[in-house]
Image 1 (cartoon, rainbow, N blue to C red):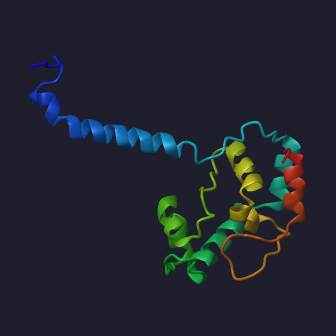
Image 2: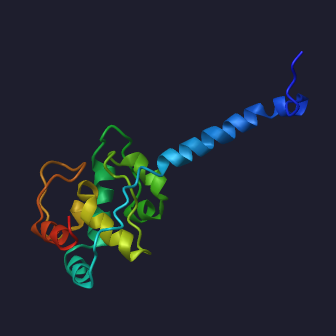
Amino acid sequence: MFRLAFINKNTLTNIPRIITLIVIICILYSCMGDVEDNSDIDITEEAMEFADLHFTAFRYSEYEYQIAILVNAGKEIYYGTIDDWQALEWHTRQMYLPDCFVQELPLNSDHIYYELIGTLSEQYGYGWDDETHEGSGNCWNGDSGNLDTYRAMIGL
């Protein structure tokens, strides 16, 4: 009878652990592709100054909260205060937001912050000072000349 030298009783009992580890690695690897790599976007000092004049995380955060308390979007409606909302972890806030809200706005990384406000307009369009939008919320589908100008400044 043929027997592999490395397979023994202890190896067989570890197979579920090995399979679980392989599944976790595959899941983590597949999640890495969810965030588009836009590191080639040229965010100049001029573009950052323009964005700082016309986009605020506070304005965006207020709209995000309004969407969570007013719009069902196929998910739960949030019933807490805005202060409670802002204290929640991102993955918890996503439970109350439409699917287009895909990434938390990082306040500790200039490049990613300025990249996201220019590339994820369905989510961050609400933060521009001249934005207009139709309907009662959900994903932003309006217009913003300042967003258009900013996108041109960073090469989008």
